[in-house]
Image (cartoon, rainbow, N blue to C red):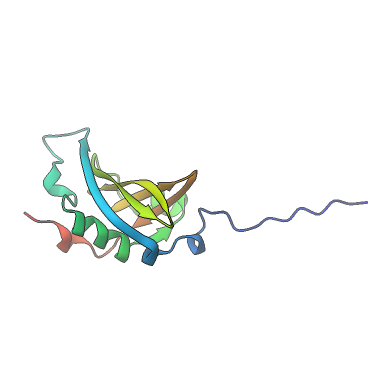
Length: 119
């Protein structure tokens, strides 16, 4: 008898993330591998601006992120609450981000977030 393998949508798939479930976004830190070129002024450094990133961002897969978005040497780091969990996030100066919650990971990009920088 032949076996049947069922593949269900992974938690990292686009339908698994709900931006409206994001709460209490907190900017906790900043990191840069090129501090002369990429500074905290290049990333969202206010809680409200980081929260706006999550409202505006869209989910992408790793290939899309790699092929269509630039790498940035600096990022804002923080935590937020998502569906009852405390989750870690990272938003780069290229307006790409990652959200990690309880073993799940979502890759996010924002094509319309430049106005969130407070210079």
